[in-house]
Length: 466
View 1 (cartoon, rainbow, N blue to C red):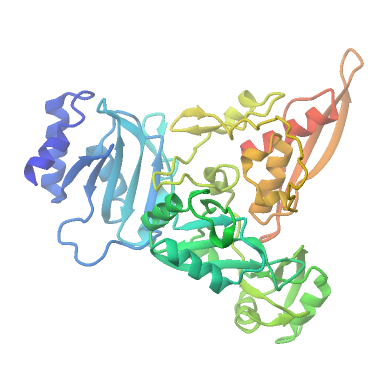
View 2: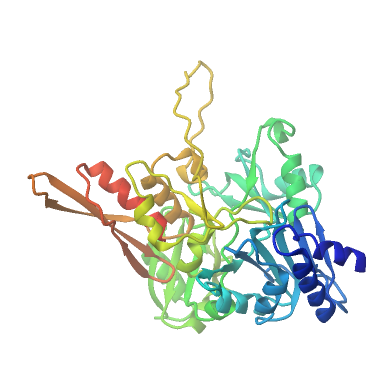
């Protein structure tokens, strides 16, 4: 192990003085007792730490660190991240040249330590003028399976997935909004680990596996929002799912007031789900326990605490919350001032990866195709599509708000007259988070000559600043 440590310590000698850097890393390992191994483009410090017994820490203990100076290594990083707690493992992504790749993953021994690291080290000035970004690392264990026959029940889908993939823990199926006897044509399959999910995704590639004679769609599911325990302890809003389309807000309010009259402040319903706001948290928690699984207008409802929107972290998860398929999630840390520089007539929707712009969603294929006799057309919701199917920022913003359970964006049009007499237009966009009832306005600092361009610019500006 000592030889491995020495080899890893000398691995970045091409950037810093080999003797100086190697000595610093060896001194760190001698001081801490941690081992260090470099393999597969990353250098692992610890994992486990000396004297560790039992399994690794659970999910939620790892943070992602972005915008690390390329000539910074463990001897500088470890002391900084030890301020939040005991490090189980630090994985620094490495280039072949010996530089780091600008990002790392730090796993702590507890979730509380990981949350503290985010709190005290996000936007931390690690060197003069160099600020790192720290957020939760999402180890995705869930796959999205689309194009499932709508008459299949949960048990049938679960059994089918267990036949061909390993490590299946659960299958989540939602009833159709209009017909509760059918599913919505998709399901989420939960696996015991990220590796199991990754292997299953590879196994389920369309064309290689056709359950029930159907070609299914397979992709990574959007990771669930992670909200710290302290914030969740203040939530007094319930998220109610699987309602009938015909069920009214008044009916929902009356049903939730039954167990204790007058506790519900208001209800906001969107299609087949709703947010029930309570005056007091204790009543919301009690109502969740009583109402979960109850029937309203013939539909068995699911009730959970609503997760407040974390504006600071929502942009980190790109525009639709979709995280990279691997655990090495390259989350963006954009600078606010970049918004005005990126904006233009054609939406680029770019984000920053480790300080460099990366392209937004792939260019939409604009070709047209003939409809041949016998082709089956299936009604779908636009929200079941991927971002790559949308070519405009207006559609991206609508999709983004839906994914985060916010109200649809509201556009307010304003005009002025230029010096040469032209009518110039600009939109102000209002985003309302239904879960916590916050309202935020966005308005670009540029005027347009057409309504279409003004709306597109406003949507683009909003996406870049959320």
